[in-house]
Amino acid sequence: GDRAEHAHLDGIAFICMGVREEHGCDLPLMCDSLNLLRFSGGWEGQVWVVTDGGAELRAICPTAVFEAVAAPKVPSVMQMKSVKRQLFEIIPGHPRTLLYIDSDILCVGCLDPFLATVGGADMAMFHDVPCPFGGCSEFRGGFIYMRDSPSTRECIGDWDAELRRDGYRFYLEDQDALDIVRQRGQCLGIRAYPYSMMQAVDAGYFCRTFGRYRLKRPIFQHFTRGLRQHRVWPSTYGAIERQLGELMPSAWSPPRGLQAEHRRHHAGPAPHAPPR
Image 1 (cartoon, one colour):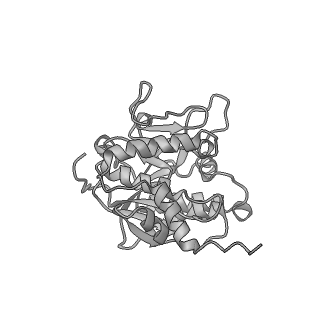
Image 2 (image 1 turned 30 degrees about the vertical axis):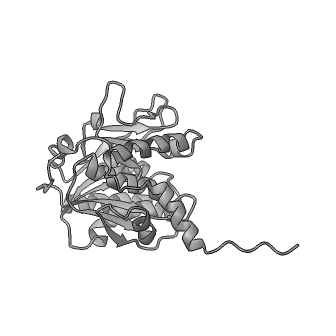
Image 3 (image 1 turned 45 degrees about the vertical axis):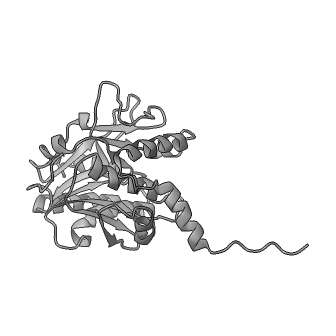
């Protein structure tokens, strides 16, 4: 894609929190997402990462272009998910338009076709994956375009108020709360992006080669939690890094290896075995 100085988009924001917890952000995957945004998508605009692991992310992703923004301290996973609705307050410089992308969504194609459709509404999202047996939400909560407007502020306020039920313990996914809000007649101005641009890669349907697709060439692929907890994930992630290596400059090093090296260095020397 061409250099993107887009009239409808001041920058792209990621959130990478809970780095050291079991449920937290996958730093190597976050690094892959940043690199693919540039080298596959062609994005050269502003990128922010709201994170509590900025030093480690920079250590394993030394060539990626992003601005780390200190994440607020929150006590639960669901409150981490709520941070995306605070981005206009958290990100410096008072951006007027933002694209929020989950750290497990990779840009696998040129962004130009997406950027041609990015505006047109104060908020826009992708529909959730089709669920033949039910149980899915209307919209996917991990990809949100937001223009800082009264209607956006009202929608994210209504959405967050619903999400806070029972001290953020009522919902397992924040997009389920959005369904309830929309059923009440709120947040009705959300525009849907073309579903052909997004592909969910789950344990039941995954592509080891993320550049080749069945009847579909998406711009984004979402490597879902279900896949990342499945036994196939190590081999799938290895395929991602191998293919990413084909796009990256020769000095690039895979982030998974850099993470292991960084953690060994900061763990200090191994304790000596006691004498026998």
